[in-house]
Image (tube, rainbow, N blue to C red; front, side):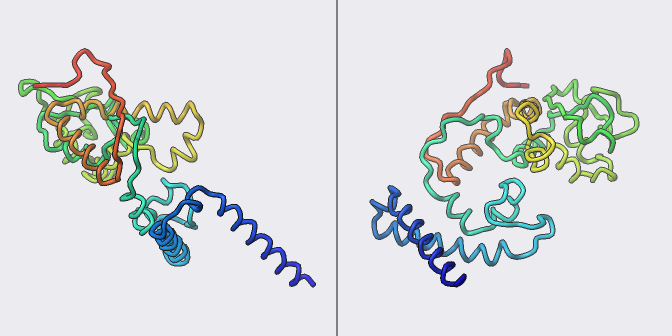
Length: 261
């Protein structure tokens, strides 16, 4: 009796879902090509649900389709579905902040090519404060350039400017060395999963984190040799993502928008 009732329930449920989907605009007006594309996407989703999302991932425990994007990003970006969505035409992006449109790792790479760029922190960087101290960047003229050893060195004085390249080269090995420096700087210009879903999951806290990103990146982006390269990367990455039109917000908060040496 129970099996008969379950079978009847499943049949009614399937009919309800099919009737609901039949009312969708894309279902009513789809061409044969669109129908075929929809079938392919559904097939890929089903395949990846039983393969990629069923496999163990050391850095992401208990993965599942539809999980938080930032948490599952490492898996998501490797899927065929994501590749399709990235290339899919998306029309207009009507609100974005220019200072946060380029991948932070790309911005850091561009910055490390500029000898004039320096970094400072309000106190010597150590394991006890690396999670809270934010870097400040500025381009300095040759006569002001510093040869100090680094921001993790025992002799570092608060708010003392250090060459960006030197700071990276001499970053304390206990904090990860040069790669640790990269993680620290990039982390200051991004919102990570823990911040998004745990430690900063209120409007006030996430806005504080969001605002701090621009305070950090401005000193890099607004350096004249970097700005055109930043804009070029902004355009190229947007094109790669299939975006056709963008209205970008630009912050003009300073007397001089760009630093020119």
